[in-house]
Length: 203
Image (tube, rainbow, N blue to C red):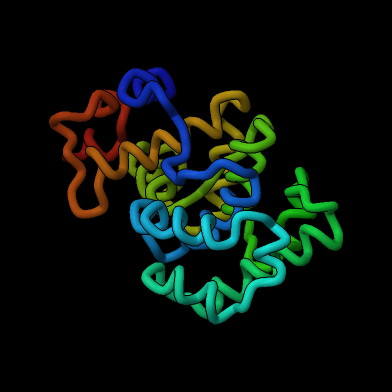
């Protein structure tokens, strides 16, 4: 499965666009209940208006909300971005921290976001980003017991994935979930993973 996804998607990277570590952190927060495509449409103007962490920390929450309005839940998200910038400056010297404990203590950051940061920024082995695509496809493949609980999916995948492959594997599942194994229809006939997939075997 790892090799098959590598052939399909050689670049197993996050589709969110960013230049600075904290920009990825903020973009992931914006992506909650929103598509990466929409976030990538919003962030260029947002990051141009607030080009530094200090600018975000001093920003008016309502103005931030105007830039991210189309991402949904903009009031909570804009508040989290400003608060997170303040905490990064006051407690972490303006740097994104590199441990799960420190990351989940930041405003608006949960395990999924923290795992993505640990994998993409710090290249920590063994991280699993259990987003909706990962949960769905891992269940279909038979890598998990079919649970929809992100924490359980993360635990089950950690136990079987090669640690050095797990982060990129999850990114590739996202790409696979958009292209072939969609929520609406699993296109098993065109999927190279079908011979080793529980779901395809039942079709």
